[in-house]
Figure 1: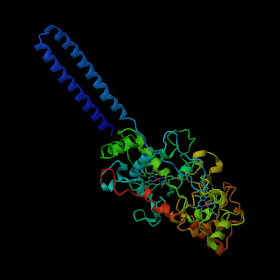
Figure 2 (figure 1 turned 30 degrees about the horizontal axis):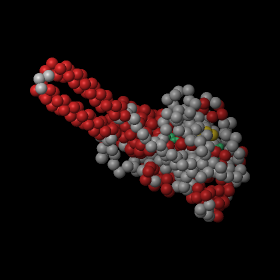
Figure 3 (figure 1 turned 90 degrees about the vertical axis):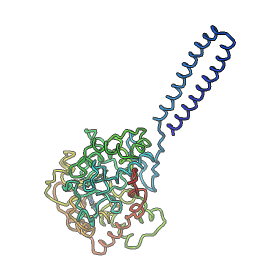
Length: 424
Ligand code: HEC
Ligand code: HEC
């Protein structure tokens, strides 16, 4: 639009100068006929000066809109806080959410060229592993990654199994199973979702890409530079802006419409079994899950904190929370993942040791392993677990399944775009 306006201004300017020259030449013809040769010479000089002056003016008026071209007006993207959710959002001051940024981020999230390569076999994007219909995990039924064990572009396994991408805009306590990215990290490049984008693109067990190559590739794909301009005010693609756009998109992935959410709003009723499961979930003498996984008053269904939940008694993983904090209480501690949509995100635990939720519940019921590092919130450790009856196990499971949010899993705003900006 600015370029168009610039053309119009220039055309008008040229027309004006042309009219001026034409008009003055006519007058000067008349003057010379009248024999005022000398004075006309003087006037001609004056006119020449005026002409130069007006050309200068024209130059200025053509340049002005060119600076306007750099001014961009992205539309703020407002996150509506769902019923019962915390009001505080983790959005960095230097990456405000905009409609244009989110739109670009969605393209990049799904575009296999994010690996910096264009041969079909070597293309990979975030969506290769993070599938919407599996709550942005790979899923245990994944055709490409049997058992949900994901591998990067070079065929190497990731250290842990996947984590979902749900409601991450409310997470201030660190990303990753062991929380390796967290706001106060002394390393400024290891703090945010923006950093996660760089890590996923460059990690040898993920996209194994090169940031310069990726940036150059997107610069060359028709349509993308214009989208970067709309989102960030420059057609020059930078890797920072790639990070920012994808992080913006990831922050929009909000799940707040499960059956349980609708129950809390009073629009649906839970079954007897689901209600009983809810009571078990949120009571210490029941299943005692809520301390770490939320519930009433914490609709995220995670505290986003790290605990040793008694899966093992010997700790050898070099990538637990202890590796990050150096605090001995964090041996064998990992993030308590959200239980939203957990029905779809097997295999379970950071090493994927459980295939089904039934196995997970059996573990919490009677399979705990004691050690000096078990988190004190595992109140029933001395009994080996919370000791649920078969009916209680069934009811707890029905409650957990009320946390499935089909509108999140099918929301078109989160899904793969039909076409990429270059029409492919
Ligand atoms: C090869 C499969 C794979 C690809 C491709 C991939 N991821 Fe992941 N992602 C994972 C795994 C595995 C984890 C869990 C990592 C861990 O903590 O050990 C993860 C974790 C995450 C998390 C942390 C979630 C949380 O709750 O802490 C975010 C955010 C994320 N990925 C974003 C991305 C983005 C953005 C891309 C694309 C640039 C991407 N991922 C590409 C496998 C993948
Ligand atoms: C002391 C905190 C704590 C308590 C109490 C707790 N959990 Fe967990 N939960 C965790 C942690 C930490 C993990 C991840 C552990 C790992 O992978 O090493 C986890 C993992 C899970 C997972 C697997 C999630 C996934 O995506 O892989 C499920 C399901 C689960 N818990 C359900 C429950 C249920 C049901 C209860 C109550 C019976 C419960 N938890 C009680 C901390 C806790």
